[in-house]
Each structure stands twice: as structure tokens, then as C-alpha cells.
Image (tube, rainbow, N blue to C red):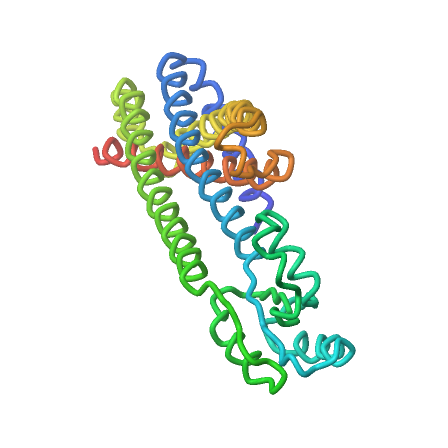
Length: 301
């Protein structure tokens, strides 16, 4: 690239930024309306996204707590039963295995029951067992089958219905979130495009004169695109801080107790870098694409 072309490019880039920035204040009312629409759209998308993230987090917690029990042969001594732990934990998809003696199981069983009803019984009616957690709940059935094939294991208990329900709930939550975010992004783009188009309509004569004077489409288009980028960035910044405040209020309300206290929200200080990046990228994309789509019609002179 020659020095002349480089200087021309730098001058044009400066011109685009200057014109785009000045246009925001020249058409202040429409710029304000555009920023408000971007803020509203990003808040809606952000709220749905954060709800989906928190649902996924809570489903993952339930998955981590999911376990099954493997009952051991009663002829095994406690030492032999304890030695089985390393064998079980070596099975693929087993994250941990905790030994529960028959005495511990008996104490847990009668803890919340009427002891008088079981006064004639003792822990000998129960078996030693292992409480086994898995890494991937979707492989629960295969893992249970692998553990049950051990000669020392005589029976097992696994809540397959609960596991399948968690998997279905997670898949549905993710699918709904993806669809809603995609639809809301398209709706946002449409609304922003039409909002910017209204602003551009007031400048159609200016665009027509520039075209008649020989200005290229790129020369006319880029100030509008820069204007859209700046409006999108401003909307993203405002939406981010509003989302922060709204999420913090909801977080405090959930932490305050009630039925929702069983639902654990991720703290915003864990989420803000991702939220800021997504809001920034979405705001820039919506602003730039909205401006480019809005001005396309007026360039056809």
C-alpha cells in the first residue's frame, strides 16, 4: 500500500469516526430512542440468558449430588469391604465411592423413626454398602451395570427416573434458552434497524445529494455504521449496569429465604466478565448491522 493510500485511509477513518460521533448529537432524540431500544433488548436477552445459566448450574448441582448404592455380600468382612473402594473408584465414570457400614446405615435409618418399633432389631438386618457418585449422569445406567458385575456386589439401588428427569430438564432448559436468545436477537435487530431507519429517513436528502456528487456507497455508509457502533456500545454499557443492579436485587431476594432459597443463584461477580463481553459484542453487532440494513435502501438512488 502506498503512502498516499495509507494517508487517505487514515483520513477517511478519522472522517467516519468524526461524522458518526457528531451525528449522534445532531439527531439526539433518535439516538436516545435507539440507545433505549438496545438497552431494552439486551436486558431481555441478558435476563433470559442468566436464568438459563442459573438453571443449568442448579441442574449440575443436582447431578453432582446424584448417587446410587451398591450393597455388598454379607459374608465379606469390614476389611475386605473397605479394600473394595479402590476397585470401585477405578470403574469409568465413578467420581467417588464412600463406604457405609451396616452400623452407620442402621443409625441413619432409625434416626428419624420411632426407635421403639425397632427395639427388637439391630444392624445385622442390613448390609454394608457403598455410596457411589458419578461424573456424567447420562452414563449412570452403564456405571451401575459395571459396578453390579463385581462379585462382591449383590444388589444396588439407583434412581434412574430422577436421573432421566434431570437430563431431560437440562436439555429442555438449554434448548429453550438458545431458541429464545436467537429469536430475541433477531427481533432486536429488526427493531433497532427500523429505529435507525427512522433516523436515517430524516437525512435521505443529504444522502441523495452526496450520491449525486459522486460519493461512493462506502463513503456514505461508514459514518452511519460508526454511529450504530457507538450507539450499540453505549446501549451495551447502560444495559450491563442495569442488569447488574437487577440481578443483585434478585440475588438478595433469593438469599433472603422463602421457597426460592432452594434455588442457588451464581454471584454476579462470577458472571460479569462474560456478561460484559456478550453485551459489548451484541451491542456492537446490533448497532452495526442495524445501521447497515437501515441505510441500504437510501443508497439505491
